[in-house]
Length: 123
Image 1 (cartoon, rainbow, N blue to C red):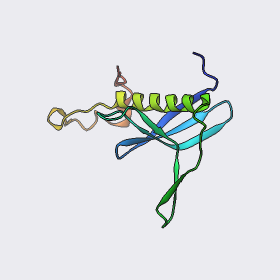
Image 2 (cartoon, rainbow, N blue to C red):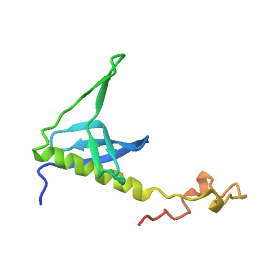
Image 3 (tube, rainbow, N blue to C red):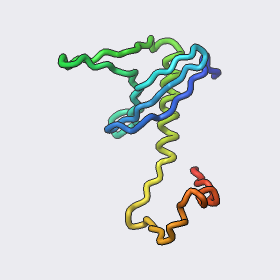
Image 4 (cartoon, rainbow, N blue to C red):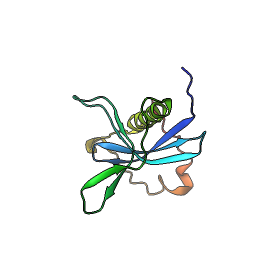
């Protein structure tokens, strides 16, 4: 199925149990900052929410942008955000402290030799 819009997304940062994602709808030139993406767990599938705006002192929140979820734009933004988080999760390499190797050679990671090391490859 061909997309109606060109949408890309990138993870801004991890927040609690979710990822804050920035989406760009290229066709209309809109950035949407603050999309929240929750990866699946035992009880829920992927969840994607538009940014919220808190109203100071009142304890209420409002969406700063709303989507009619029956139209293709929402689905394309949602899919781009999920793909961005999947890429982020795939690139996170967890190395237990017991397997860390500490270099005693101070020049090994200096800016002059940094480019002599091959780039890490992620599967």
